[in-house]
Length: 190
Image (cartoon, rainbow, N blue to C red):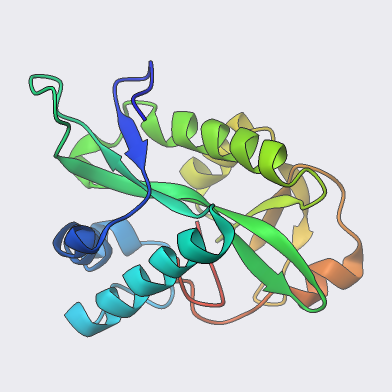
C-alpha cells in the first residue's frame, strides 16, 4: 500500500529475510536495545517467521517499509514497523514498533508509520491498547510514539518507559513481558 508520505508498506514476505537481518544486526539500529543486534541469520529467520505467523493468524502485524520512487514496483526495503499483538498476562496489547536503516533516519517516516499503525490497530481492534516501550534515554523513539498519539503511562518491570493510547491499569503494566527487546520476541520493543 503506497502512502502519501513517500514510502509504501506491505506485510512481510519470506524474501525480506536479508533486509531484516541487515537492519536488525546493525549496531546503530540497536543502540538502545540491551539485547543487542541479531546474533545471526537463524535468529532473523525465527523473527521473520513470527511476523509471518501474525499475519496468517490475526491479519495484522509488522510491515515491511519500502521506497523506490523511480520504479513502479517498489522494491527497496528501508525499514520495518507497525503493530503486533503482545500478550500481557491474561490481556494483550498492540506493541508499536518502528525501525529504519540509519541512512533513512530524519525523514519523518518513523512518525508516519507509527501514526498509520496506531490508527490501523484502533480500526481493527479498538478495545486493545496500543503501547510502545523504550529505554528512558531514547528520546527519538519517545517523540515518535507521542506523535502517534501515545502518552507516558508508566514503566514496565524492566524500567522501560511505557507509552499508550489510553490509561493502563497497573496490573497490565506489571504483566507486560520483560527481557528480550527484539521486535518479534515476547519482550517486544520499539
